[in-house]
Image: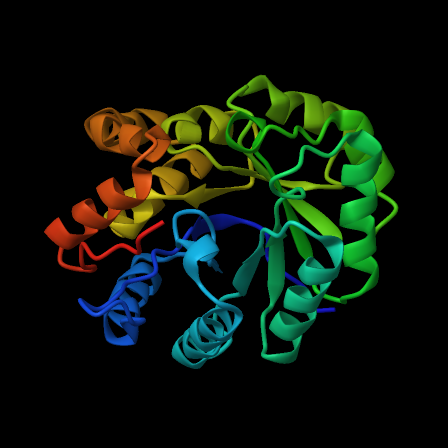
Length: 273
């Protein structure tokens, strides 16, 4: 199992496409290079913002291998697992491990709403079939399943389940998690409009969306808050907020791709649903 440095800014990477709907690996490289130059400490492929539900398994692996070649093990590359069935999720996790992924970000089961027992079993079963470290994506607002503190208590027996993308939109959940588990789980803010608040409450990192268009500004907020330079961080955050709100809109993919097009590091092409 690879040791992951669970801190810093991890972009939820966009997946650029060409005008004829193919992976635009040249533009992906341009965007990723801008992220790395700004000081990101990891990247996540194939999430909602990366249009993962429109990518077939071959495209996901192609994107993973390209990203790994690009960063040359300087930062961890995660791939998203967002599937409807445990069997399919395990297959993707194992393929990702085979092709060099450093860790996984895993959503609860998709489509059918799982209860607490089913959700815990889902995560435990995937964890038992791969050695990769796991970030649990906790987003009940969009995906209708909350991984509660009691569920995290059950998951704590799995050493590879190490990190949480906290997207409940309740900033005090950072405090509750820390009070209950100490440093057992690393905690990442997963909502752009709550980044500064959750960092000040003790979050270890950010899984960002608008970082895909504004990497330097996002990394600056993280570093300034961690250095205790709150007024400087707040000045950037206040300037940034109208744009950060694009991350919580239903058309976040289109909006953030447009923003990244304006900063020269993506194209507007999105896949049809």
